[in-house]
Image (cartoon, rainbow, N blue to C red; front, side):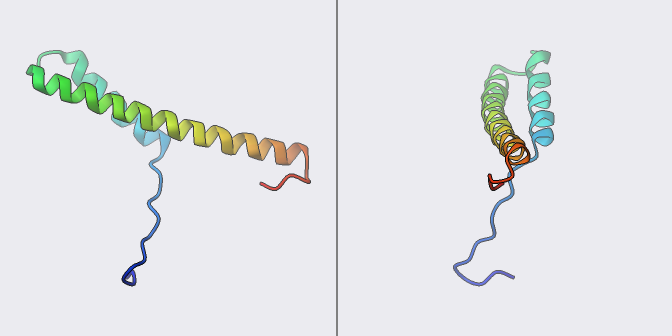
Length: 78
């Protein structure tokens, strides 16, 4: 249990999970048979997920770059 005033860090979603959710939203759009309001909501959801996936991908790339630099130069902290 958490003490009052303390929060557990929220773990970033896995890139693979974001991608699967994005694919699901795109499938809804591709069907094109839903009412317009649902299609607009699916489009907005896809845009949010895409932005989150891009952010997560940038984080992962930065982490991989940092590891690569530390392997090439042991004086760099990972």
